[in-house]
Amino acid sequence: MATYSDNDHFIVPDENPHSDDDPAFLSETDAASSTQSLTSSVQNYQYENGRRYHAFRQGEYAYPNDEKEQERLDLLHHINLLVLDGELFRAPVDMDGARVLDLGTGTGIWATEVADEYPSAEILGTDLSPIQTNWVPPNCRFEVDDFESEWQYRKPFDFIHCRNLGGSVRDFPLLLTRIKDNLNNGGWVEITDFVAQAFSDDGGLERAPNIVEWCRLLDEASIKFGKQLNVAPSYKRWVIEAGFKDVKEEVYKIPFNPWPKDPKMKEIGRYELPNMVESLESYTMALFTRILGWTPEEIYVFLSKIRKELEDRSIHLYTKFIYVYGQKDEGE
Image (cartoon, rainbow, N blue to C red; front, side, top):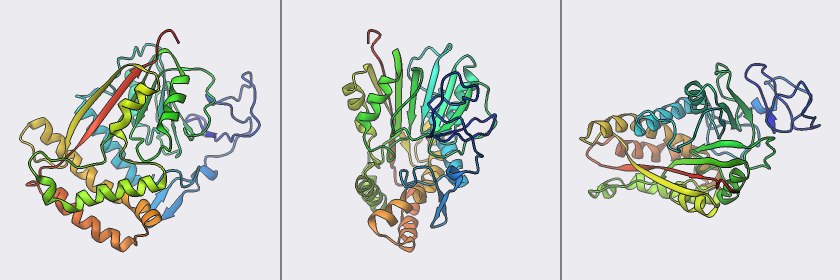
């Protein structure tokens, strides 16, 4: 693990764990007393086919972390807000003084906004990449961490939030077991993702063969990679099997472009279109070149065909956002 504080700009490598009494302790987890600059190995980013990828645990995440992708992730956050009418999460968590963990925090925008809205809560965001802003509320901080490694948090949380982890987890049942083990009794988990698949209620899939093939190939490549992308439909079952109670699943349609007549759906589609266009290269390049053996040139030709189908408002396609949340039993 490597950890850092937004206020002090420290990287804390994972050798030589120290005691709780160490005044230099900056991390939730066992870390080192020695520090080094943020220009350390975690920022020795990898560059491939014009995109930038993470350095910490290199290769464990197949999608870029550059500014272009960060802008797309923030756009996706806005789409989530539109879907939920401005709400940041669906689980009925008592946020008064709550300890919150945001796994795979990305740009940190969700953690930052939760910290702003609930100043008495303590928010920790973790990610493989230290790409989060330095300008955060005092009750929010970030750590560089791999949530697929052993967890060593000193205190349990009241709420653990996971969003868009499809394609980045080898073993979701194990992850949910760790989440449950690190929640207070009565604590909540919420896991949210898009379904990596296109849907149509009026035969539109027949007019979008390239989108259909893209989704199929992405799933094939991600499975071969060992971290399947299209996993959201399994979240509810996995959360129930992990032993959570009162598990709820909410499913929302997300149009690929502004084709719907309904004003809210049209607005969502207006933002989803650029998200989809920008996601083409983000999701495709590494998986197709590393796993399927495609050349970048072949990918660009394929993506141009997909883009035309995405932008065609006469093709009524949509995906689904799935929100699943459940509670750890009070008596455990």
